[in-house]
Image (cartoon, rainbow, N blue to C red; front, side, top):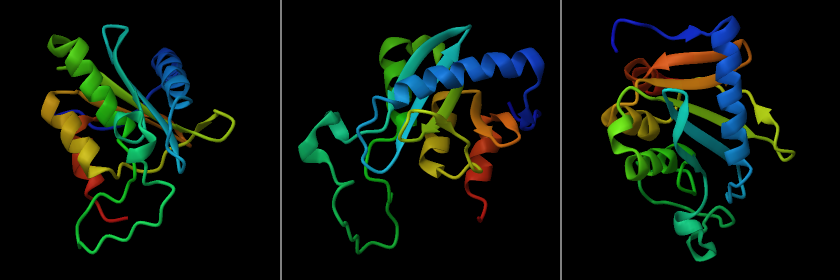
Length: 164
């Protein structure tokens, strides 16, 4: 990592990435968040080694805050209501395939109410970027309007801190 920069994938690489994005979209359909449906797959050597969707902790209704008006009196807090899809995918990969996480690729997608993939904006979640970087995930992939973009995770992390 470090010397490469983000790039939009082309031809066969893009086709393969879209297949993984489609798998992440299937995972996103299981999301329990009332505000947003997200899915993530982590891939190494052509195999999914971890997956996750966003939902309340433990998938339990009593842990749900996405249907409540929450007012935090703190200047710094995570404004999301659920466990992120990326967190769950990383935890899943570390539980099932800890030796394969280093050098893997993380594919993230959000789906609409019909389960169709939505295009992503710029990198923004600093918690997800730090966690992916810390466990050794090599690349973070998002599907933008211009195509699937592969970010080296260290660059993704830096970009997630950039002002909007």
